[in-house]
Amino acid sequence: MNQTTAATTPVNTEASFNTVVKPTILKRCLSIFAAGPVKPGESYGAPGQGKSLAISLFTTAMLIGIWYIATYFQWVKPLFLPSPGAVVMRFWEVATEGFANATLLEHTGWSMMRVFSAFLLALVTAVPIGIFMGVNRIARGIFDPIIEFYRPLPPLAYLPLVIIWLGIGEVSKIVLIYLAIFAPMALSARAGVKSVAMEQIHAAYSMGGSRWQVIRHIILINALPEILTGMRIGIGFGWTTLVAAEMVAAQAGLGFMVLNAAEFLVTDIVIMGIIVIGIIAYLFDMLMRYLEKKLVPWKGR
Image 1: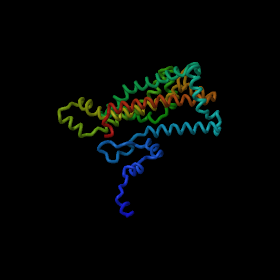
Image 2: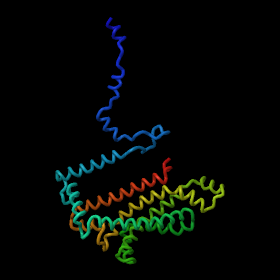
Image 3: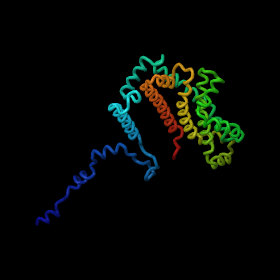
Image 4: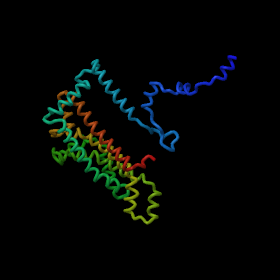
């Protein structure tokens, strides 16, 4: 009798199902770092695809935490590694009172003027030259040895020559940064031209397209992803060269501020200047990524 009753008693499957699939706190925390659902039409997702913002935020928090612990327990002397709180306090002090006869806003303004002036100058010269190198063998023969010769040279190697030719004013600083940005942008534009599928070019010619129309509507459009990548790389080289450019006769600038603070062992200002330069460069890189999504949505598809 008992066995019959037990066999005919209905089982609460809904309660059992909820008990099995209910996620734990650990699973909920780990789900934050999940890559997310794959795109339609992709069963497993492309390698490297998925969200990484949570991982980046976690990594940043971990680095700041390690930095705080190392300074709190004085594993490193404050002279060599000040605490995050000391850097924040110095940030506010320099922003309000200034350092080396200029506020943080003035230092940032001068550096941005130099870097972005050189960037715009490289944009209107390096990209056309790079495209011209890709579509014309004479242009490639003229510019390729020049670019490939000076590209591996560090900016400090030709800094004295730039000073001898152009003096110690703002022109020499902008030209030095411009030379650092020019090479990667020109070579990226040339690589973009070479990446265009020959079938597209033949199809355009077979439909009656002229050489200029092929360059404008086929080559330039398909080279745009490489051009944008070169712009991202070039602006990085520009910020790297900024410190070298502001070594000579500069009165303000982030690189000048870092070098001046290093001479007096003011490490918190050195770290603060490095952080400001990194934040500005990262924000510009995010802007370039946004433009890349809007201008070349077909990239990677």
